[in-house]
Length: 136
Image (cartoon, rainbow, N blue to C red; front, side, top):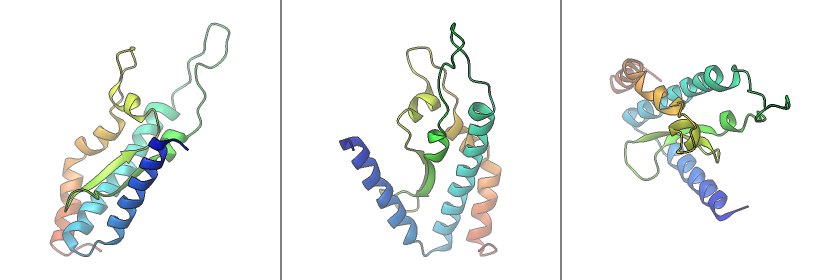
């Protein structure tokens, strides 16, 4: 396991610990909204990656192999570094390239970003219901 992998695992443990410490309705709402966004990111990944045919090379071989790692590496939890803050994340080594693209011509897909930015009314409704005490 590389140093980066170890650091990611330690960070994920901190996220999990912080998530287990939630007591206020406000933080419960923040977490519920983050988990909702994680679900939306999974839907985005299915429609933008997993339900799209894999391109083939000149010799007929697939250009890449789908392993499911990207989808399996998605998560959400409380941000261990900020109070009253949640995060939606992906720990796959190539997640940043899939999200934002790179200088080699890979176009970003904004899978994680769109799970938040395209669902602001739903996130607000989730937060409102927890702050008002209507949700559990």
